[in-house]
Length: 340
Ligand code: GCU
Image (cartoon, rainbow, N blue to C red; front, side):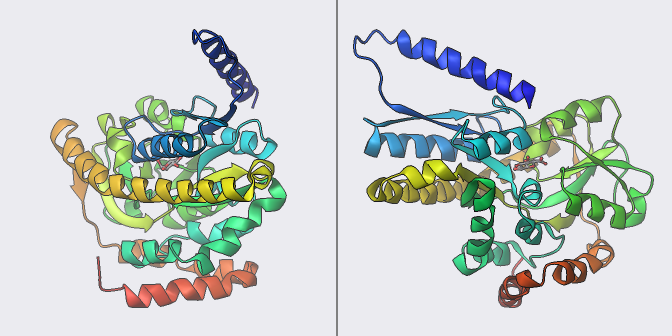
């Protein structure tokens, strides 16, 4: 937290200095809107947030100056969520995984094998009856989810052990995101869960503190994990969305007209990011195979799924209020089961 606060302060100071060097004699009275995320500037998420910046400034540029901070410049995701909670920054992108520690409702989207296909996943995330009760549940924590971003499918990848069944995970230290659901999933699958922030994973792989990790294909190329890990196994254990969250006081302080423009902007983030995502993943796969020598493996997903199954029942018992939402997702699973 201290690191994030110090970084933020430095960023604010530099931004202030730069604004002062603009050469204009008029002071810049615009309110700065800070948005943090942990991906590179090539990533679909960054591209989408820059589109948001341009959109908001084209509509409300005399009042707001939007600044996007990539690459954990404002801290790790956990730190950025806390900065968004307090209002030190206005928005950040956080994996749904982390948000379950702020509101238990988010646990639902972290369940392994919740969605039968990416079509069922997208349809569920686009249905406000499903996302609404979850996105609003962090209001008492000081923030609200304003849209979701695609983060593909999470799969295991390892330095030197091809994972073809859960038994292959035994004895391996696998990095997971910092959430109870992910630790539990790893335990059920037989590996040893090592929770840590995203930015620490590359060094941990390289120094052999961990034997592997799990993520979408972009982590191989954009974050360099494929330089170290040579086996990527499509066990398809989770489709965990990223969530754009906003400070509640900031959002509630917007006028009705402004809020409508921001809502249009959030929709734009979602559309641009999803459009970019499809080609970004295709390119990452080709690059990982051709330039990094990563082998893509296609194990039978059934044994992985069976090992995780008890988590569904356990979650519904613990959080019975989530049952209608869970059932609505099952209806999409039925509808889109056959599509890959
Ligand atoms: C993906 C996801 C990030 C997340 C990361 C992780 O890259 O998009 O939001 O931080 O996985 O595994 O931590």
